[in-house]
Image (tube, rainbow over all chains, first blue to last red; front, side, top):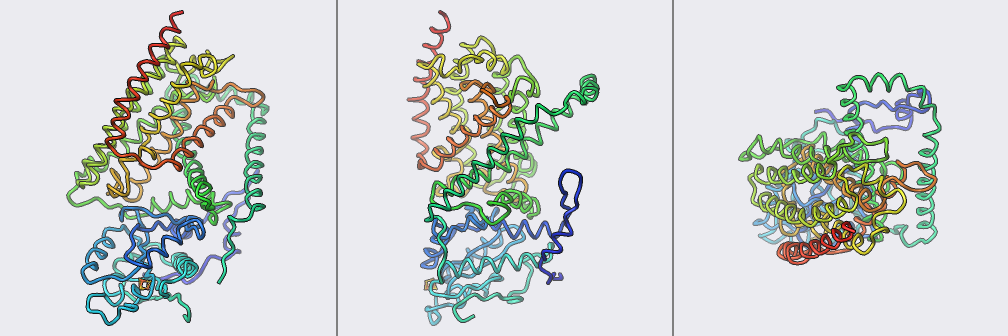
Length: 189
Length: 369
Ligand code: SF4
């Protein structure tokens, strides 16, 4: 599955506008429309695992307001597009997260939020914590920090939107090998 | 890193408010210019359509379906914006102008999403449920009078037709709950049906009260009786409680907070549409918001004089009143917390039904005079 590296430019958008008497019609390639729609309506799965979840909630709350980007939290995985894994994942919890991921319909994306979800974080030496969720689900964006500030998470979401705008429409994320195109958001990244 | 906090700036809010006001004024101005257009040039076309009943029916259905589908795009945006304002947020902002493209993006995305049918689901029921809950809504729009001329079908038994048809939503919801073969779905479906059927009784009582006062069941005639005084003003001692009961029942039938038990996230994942993804889920949403518009429009028809109002054309008045009522519903939705299921049923059978009976008896006495 090829990845379109070309982001939409202003000139390209202008070329879709076709003037007709009394206004203009917009004819755009289906692929571009699909990418635009997907990118702008990322519904996220409502679940939080630990301390990072508090920060995720505050990102959705009035001060930072994820709804500005069209992101709302849906309670059921069947209606979600993106899964924000916020917090550490214990070995016992991992199968359930994998199951939630499998229940999401394609196309689906994963954001690993916080040091724990990315690579184990402060619990890296513990035997009960999975060292990064990319061991069992393919991660699109890694947002580092302990916890990451809401600005960092928003930055990660915007990067994910950029990625979706470049992706082929028929990409199936469930089949994809992990680590293919890691996007890393963090203090030094 | 610092973030500009828009919500704290008063001038920004004022700008938003006046921007909205200007847009509303422009829409109204354009709508009031419409009657001045040379409609008479269309007469041969209209005559031709009038002579062919099948063509006529097809065109009316076409207009109604498109209206339902398109106004929902706007309503969902309004709901999210409204929720944002109620919670000191901005709501959708970056997709299109002021987020107006948001619902369009959502709709296209849902259309392109994978369509999952659970392995153990009852396939036929699962597939047909969204349409079962959408069709009654669509049918009710056929008798909604936007103005004396803008009514798809002026049925003599309009009010009865609405009551008979709109209850069938319960069928779709129950089919969705049963078909998905999921415990949360079936619980949500059962709750929805219990709630819908019990709140139907006081609602029908109040519709009956208005019908008794206006001596007719035709939606058009009900509005024509209110040419001089709205029902809610003319018979205020009975009509104000009647309207309040009607609004409560409408909220309960629409499954909106405080009565959104069928979809309560904290108890039943997402209620009866837990297993629905993509386009099928979009149909449920479509039905819900179209129903919302219809309930508000029905209340306007019954209590607020339908299309009557000064200066502006009738269609604009009707839409304006309906939108105001929808905003009241949203205001209630985003203010009140959710009730418990036993409270909801108890409230209906122990409070609303007796009150509605009393109100109806008084109305009958007034009508006798
Ligand atoms: S990264 Fe830090 S804040 Fe986040 S879950 Fe781990 S320990 Fe908690």
